Amino acid sequence: MIHNNNFEKLGYSIYPNALSEKITAEIREHINFLSDLYPQTRPESFHHDMLVEDPFIHHILNQTCVTEISKHYLGADIALFGAHYIAKKPFTGRPVGWHQDGSYWPLNPM
Image (cartoon, rainbow, N blue to C red):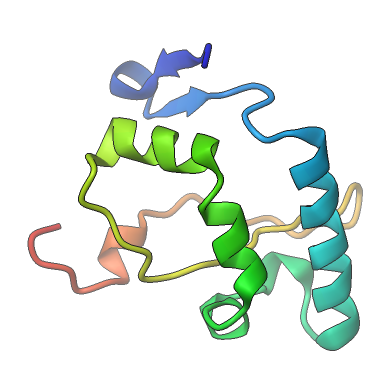
């Protein structure tokens, strides 16, 4: 998988086309499903409580590309403890400020 590995230098890496068109279409459908199910919730705020029991989020996270990228940065001993979509619609999406999730989760060791 070819990627732009700027993680150490810039704090991010880009993996173009990491997810197949089929999976990205399924994700769009899932976001539309959640939008219909939770019409009062903005798609930037589809949080853990909406997703943790949802089999589709596990389907996404079990894609080989997702697990391989995760292992590259985190090692093989990983577990899902939270899930969140930040689904920003064109032109109407609300900003999501820079943050570090570690400050929200009391994990030890971080």
